[in-house]
Image (cartoon, rainbow, N blue to C red):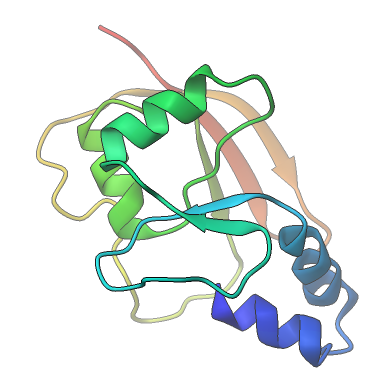
Length: 133
């Protein structure tokens, strides 16, 4: 997330990145951290409860979707069965290394494709929902 703050302060000239930085700046955020005591992002707050309680409470509130943006958070929420929809973005770049998204998920979860969208840069957004068995 720090990257997007730097883009806000020093725009890249790439409208896609710059516009995203502005958009994410206005979205309310809940930060789960064992080490942070305060935040300097105006639209962010530190979670005050454990992950399950905090997310269940957020899901009860009216409003839009809740986005989880870190691999470890996604794994934890998957294990707690708290994800209603997965939105995966496939970029036309082979990085060769990086974080594994579903690391440590030991059980099989069947997903149903509900929507796709191709972005002008060639990336594809895939929307899935878990099939409850």
